[in-house]
Structures are given as C-alpha cells and as structure tokens.
Image 1 (tube, rainbow, N blue to C red):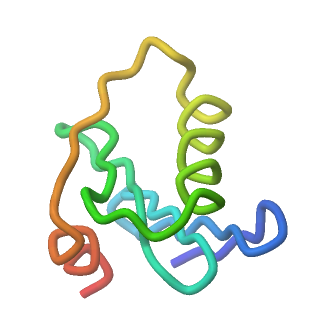
Image 2 (image 1 turned 135 degrees about the horizontal axis):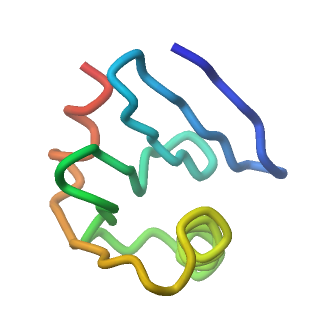
Length: 80
C-alpha cells in the first residue's frame, strides 16, 4: 500500500492490486479499479469534496474517462 498526500485534505491510497482510492478529508469518495474504471460515490458530502473529486478525476484521468457512480459502502469496501 502506498499513501500519497496530493493536496490539503486530499490523499491517494494505491493498493498492491493497482486500485487507487481517492480520499477527501477522511472519507474515500472515488477510486480507480482495473477492469471497472473510475468509481465515484453517490453520497454528497459537501461542495468542497465534490470539487476535490471532480478535480482528481480530471487531473488524473482526463475528461475522456467514463465515471460510474457507486454506493459509499462499495467504495469503503475497497479498503478491506
């Protein structure tokens, strides 16, 4: 597991299987999973967190990526 702070209150966790989990403040809110693509939480936390997620997706994957909305429980399950 690799933990990388990418900005204030924004962290990427890269797991050994290549999954990348994006954490805003202390909450996993998006991820990249091989074979599934980019996943985004359906739960709204705040305008700031929504901006963090959008910026992370655009900066990391470009605007051509397909984003799938999933439950918060599914995102949290990626952490084990």
